[in-house]
Length: 180
Image (cartoon, rainbow, N blue to C red; front, top):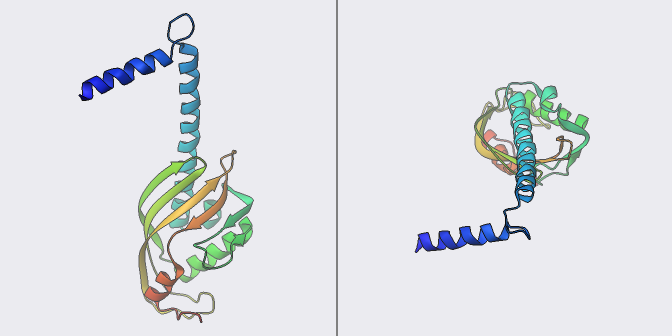
């Protein structure tokens, strides 16, 4: 039965790819393939860019981690706090976080993409060693899985970032009191 269905689908596909003269339209197939390859090439570049940004942050190179970010980018975080607008403000926030958690590291990076969006899954760990947002360090560690979601413009630059992990998870693990 599978062979019959496959044969019917192949015949239908071949019939739909013929022009008025009855021969396969190589031009249409070639242009479709070229368009698909171009989109795939852009996606592969965007995936590499997103991963490179996180690897740079992972290695303590915060400024270079944002080298492919537009000046007017927006970091939405996970929605707990208002969005951070502008590359310089986003960098300042990440520097404050990595100062408070200097041993923060990501591992098990997995990259997925569709359209102008790239998602990077990773496991993150770190220890609360320096003051952060008015909270004294506790010496406690965090460990959680997260998904960083990047949106790209047509030039291959990051224009937005989102995160999945709740800030409350980190706060609970490192002993930051919940705000009322």
